[in-house]
Length: 185
Image 1 (cartoon, rainbow, N blue to C red):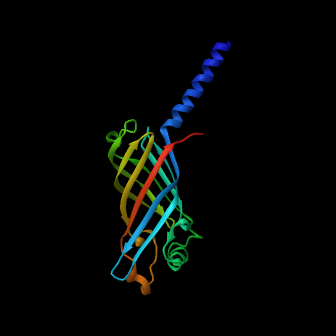
Image 2 (image 1 turned 90 degrees about the vertical axis):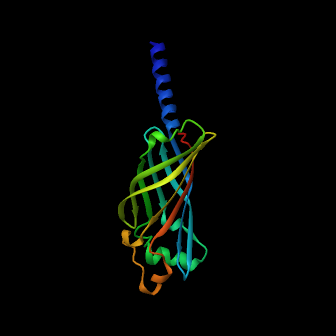
């Protein structure tokens, strides 16, 4: 009887460790965006991105507070949050998707692997399908994910007033750079 209880406990513990090793997490991921026009360049960084990566299923999720974006000019940050993103009404952005070429990525071996990810991106209360290419670099038990893609503010019902329309690009380049570590409970 004692032997079977010990076996059950060891099995449950081993299963829990196995699950933890399949999940990778970051709470200080990086997302930035860049808008370039002849009138003005706009760049903002967010270093408080939370993301989870499941290396068994290829599922990947991101979540970030819009107000965590930092701008070089405080007035830009204020206009971004109050006038365009309406951060008090739409406080966060999220992505939920999957690595579509999952077989091409070996999370158990150090190396750099091209990746394709597709899923649903939610910005400003609007959810759209999106696909992007990037890279996963596996090294020393950590995984780094890098990707770039573009979004159009109008696709997410973000209104740009006529007065500043020429200062903001019609497509905004978004860059992601996250380093994941094994999730430990």
